[in-house]
Each structure stands twice: as C-alpha cells, then as structure tokens.
Length: 270
Image 1 (cartoon, one colour):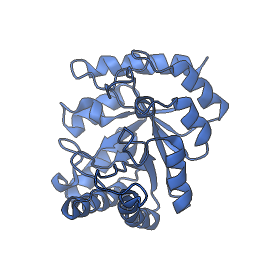
Image 2 (image 1 turned 180 degrees about the vertical axis):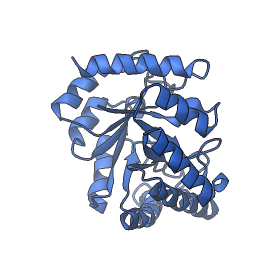
Image 3 (image 1 turned 90 degrees about the vertical axis):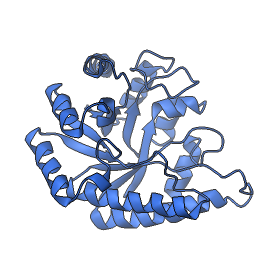
C-alpha cells in the first residue's frame, strides 16, 4: 500500500519539520502542499528547491505535489485571476519536475453565475488553462492528478462522469484523476462509484472523513463515509497507486496520523 501524508496536516510547522515528522512516523510518501507556509514557489528559489529535494532523498520520502489552490481559479471569469492562477500552476510544475514528483495535483473550478449554461464558457476557460498545464506536464513527464474539487452543483467536476469526460476530452497519458473521497461524499456521490467508474484513471486518492455537510477533513472512520466499502472496492479494482491522508487535527497531528494509518492498514488487510 503506497500510503502517504499531505504536509498540510502540519501547517503549523514549517515544511522541513513536517517532512521529518512524516518520515519518523514511518511513511514513505508525502504530498507537498504548494502553498504558504509550505511549498509556495514564490518563497522558494531553485537553490531552496534543490535543498528540499536533498532532504526528501535523505529521509527516503517519495513525493506528490499539490498545486496552489486557495484564492486561485483556473476557470475564473476575471482575466487577472485566471492568468495569475495559470502562472502559479506553471511555476509550481517546474518545481515538481526538479523534485521528481510522481503526481501534480490540481483543482478545476466552478461555473460563473453569469455563464450561460448552454455555452459551458466556464469549462472552456478551464480547458484553456488545463491545455497549457498539460503541455508543460508532458514536456517534463509529470502526471497530473485532476482532483474532484471544488464541491457543489456549480463545480465543473461535480461528479465522476464529469471528471471522466474531461479525461476523455484530453486523452493524454499524463492526465489522470485524483479522487478525494471526502469531496465525492459532499457532492452526494458514493466514493465507491468513483472508484468503479474511474478505476483505470485514478492515480491518487485523498483520504479524509466528513458527515456530508462540510469539508471537515476528519480522520477516516470518524464521519459517515464507509471506508470498509471503499477499501473493498480498492481491492476489487486492484488499485495500487498513491493514497494520501489529508486530515486536519492541528492540536495533535502526529497522534491523528498514527491512528489513521493503523485504521487503514487494518482495512487493507481484511
């Protein structure tokens, strides 16, 4: 089981502290959080990126890289925000290349209230951004994990079928899916359906729990999501790619991660 931890679990620590803790907890994979206070590219020049790469190698941590997302929108109707969102993604993917990241995770966006439903102009804006990001990914041989976020009916990727359509429209071996089980559940969909519909396209799974009303990032097993059913489906489709814990328990993150790992290993071995 390729089980890792998002460095965002330790947002109250700097990136170096987060990596050392994750390594000490016996994980071999980390998802680097591409925002402050961690790996926001504007804080890291090439020398800092290389230094971080050496630390990852020293700790024997393989990595994926979560592109910056807060305040950004690759489908934004505002030209300035759209351009800056694309710029930051392209900057980040260059860093991911230096770090030998296995997956580069990105979000899509939502339709604008003023978009005419029949025009799908919000989707067109996202497609233009994705085309540029994918071109860079193909050049650097990095696989993109397109995550099912944001949530809500207005989201471009509000269902497994919509996510599958985007993958089919681009038809690139470098564009795959990141399934966030918490986001799927918030959209009113069973994460097991995502696994079955996208079984050959998923390259990363984000693991957290909630009660269907807020993106709480609880430990698996603490909310209403059926993780036994999810892991049953994972075994049935013979999924062997990344799984990333993306929980939020700032008062005791080490304890939460250790408990989550034990819970998931027990499920995996059933």
